[in-house]
Length: 438
Ligand code: GAP
Image 1: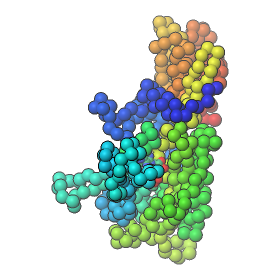
Image 2: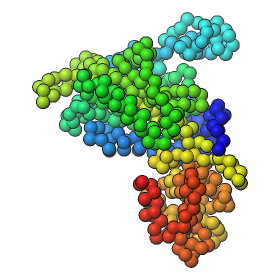
Image 3: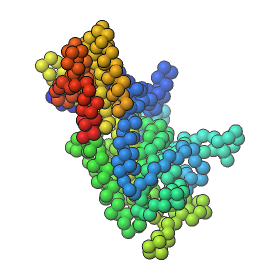
Image 4: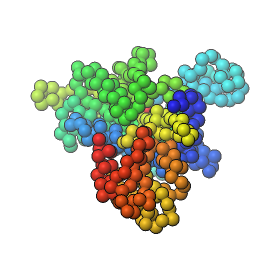
């Protein structure tokens, strides 16, 4: 097996993504928009699968979680209370020669890393995108695109508590778009200006926050492993005190070994009662929790596992990509977990000119599509069709051949082992159900 060749791997992934329809540059026909990406036919399937797997694990399979879907646009006071208006900024310097802008904390020396020119004094650059609500163009109508989904959860804490009748400890989970005007964006979908987050705010008693913080670090790490990421490519990095965000009293990153180095995949933070306290003060609303068992009223602490869909997408792609040397040449395989792979089954007729074979194959495609994403392809010879499906991670190829007309069986080929089995057409649906549910 060919070993991954970083940083060549990043180029391979980027070109595969474009060639096979996983990811395209936004507004490409106009020259593209920096660090904004569109997900193509395969990309949207895979991204939906990531979100679905996360939701299933964190909402469906837990008794202590509720879901939520908040608006991207929120009252501008939310961002004053959260600290984003005052603190969500990078210190930037400009090169006096080439005029390029750099993040000060990314510089090793006090000169331009591109041309060596002298730099301006650092200035704060807020990462939130501003926009206007309504038709007034004055500052009272100015609002922001949310830079994180978390605040929507905090401002709805009482709504969810009152309607769900949950008792702490419990969490609220949300998946949605966030926007940051990143200055040094890059590395494909790793750092984008528009991206999706999968966030949980887990509310608990202050004295239990450290226990839940440790719990969530392990639980989230385990999820990436369960979804097929090689454990050797994952590690936990605890933040030093001077690295902590303005709201956090403790934070650990789950890092992935990307081709460009170990980088943050997800952060798990102990936010204390910072957010609820701030929103209670700014909104003048009572956001306390009443514990009927102990007759105590208090502001719960919050533990927050916060991951990026786009970063998870990139990590899954990088981890799954491999080139195998076979006797008849190399084959590229995306060894994605069955829950993450964009296409689950491909139905391939061996002879596209044989109408009976095509008819059976199309009927199978229709039947299997009820259960999971299935495609039909008859546009090349079988060897090429297999390679095409391997390259996008399709788990099973079902081939209909001349023998199928008499023995009513098809060949099912498994992606990783390439083992082939003859299965009766009548049993195929059940056979695949067993494989996908195991
Ligand atoms: N609510 C906490 C929060 O937003 P964060 O560390 O700033 O914390 C959480 O972001 C996660 O969101 C990151 O671990 C990353 O996966 C994702 N993320 C943040 N900024 C991103 C960007 N510009 N592009 C893609 N994903 C990003």
